Image (cartoon, rainbow, N blue to C red; front, side, top):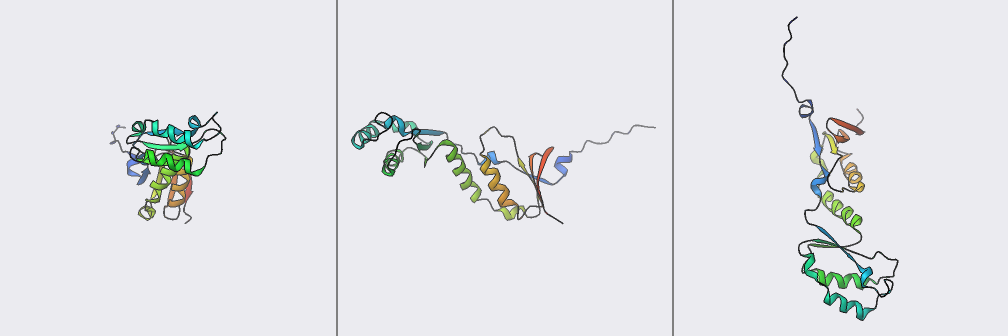
Length: 172
């Protein structure tokens, strides 16, 4: 029997799967953290006069073009106006200013990005939401994308096109 070589076929490419990469929504700008803790008396009490003076002397140019997450890592009571005052100083320099931790910032950014996705463009599609990423994509982004796609997609899988975990399949 003669061995006839068959051309190599990329079955993943021919499968009609649509791969979505959440890492593409990751912000391009660096995230800087602004912890109010170091501006507090004994890292516990906000003294208005001292706080205002410290903000005036702070080097705000270090946040130029960056995203800024403003938070307090101690269990101090921080008045809302303190965050507002930081915003006034940071606004000429930072791209985006967010009140919360780095994790909360990334959840917020991904939610904003996914709010702009039109899920109807995936009507009847077989979707793979890429799993591995070099960037810290929050689990909430995977939840939100799945929620948005489920009414439209034929199926949703997680992972890589060559090795997926089934998440959802539209009943026939």
